[in-house]
Image (cartoon, rainbow, N blue to C red; front, side, top):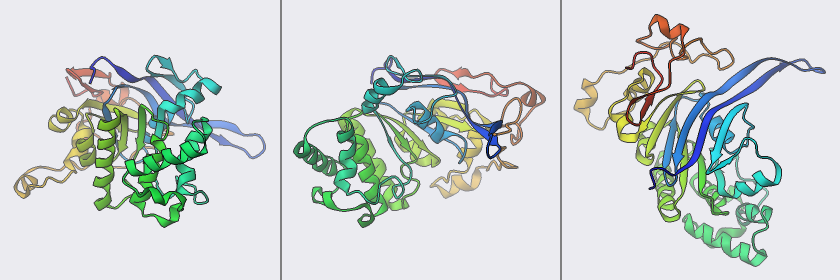
Length: 327
């Protein structure tokens, strides 16, 4: 992996969804601050894991990077191209290099389309190949994701959840992209199937040189697949480090609380360690707390935490945190 080769660069990315009132004349009365001033990079061939509680803005980050949601502010660079300022045909052309695997394999496949039509749709949209060539490409993709190529005329309801997610993976690979946002691709699947899908994604990454943003709330699975991991809380990234550094030496109190809830397969160590139980509920992203957003639930919160937002700084080489208590 080229250490200086950033495929994705996100700078101060912000996405707010307006809250409106009124039936005929709608006026904005507030905003859901789903993502607020987020910055990170993803190197070519790398997997960046993005973890956090439900509703913290993980999926919004992925979709805003791909411009499925327009950014409120900030910049997203794909190689040397700035995506937030692109529109129309130039953005459409670039979409061939960026794809997404959706969370729900039951909702993301059109039940009225055959598997062959679903996987071939990106090829048709971008005018790639003729009918015969597309059909052959679809069969190759089905083989690639471990499905029978003769399933081409079947419909989504004839497949299990794991098989449907493989169809979603095949659709994402149809245009031979460089970057794929994996938006919680295993959370809707049985535990027995999750490892199969993750192993498939790893094999495809090695085979095709893919770069992933892997969004999940299963910390043990993220540890398995990611090279670096970012932890998100209420629209902000609070910690970012290499996989081993983050899991071995967590610095932010929120990261420590998350990791303390992950079971250890050693009963002696499991009995000895202490759990960090967070009190209270996650505040509303429409009315986030002042200062550090985590201070309302933080076990080591100080007076400064409610007044000043912590600086996003590199505590150790490659280990970034936003916390007043971390030197």
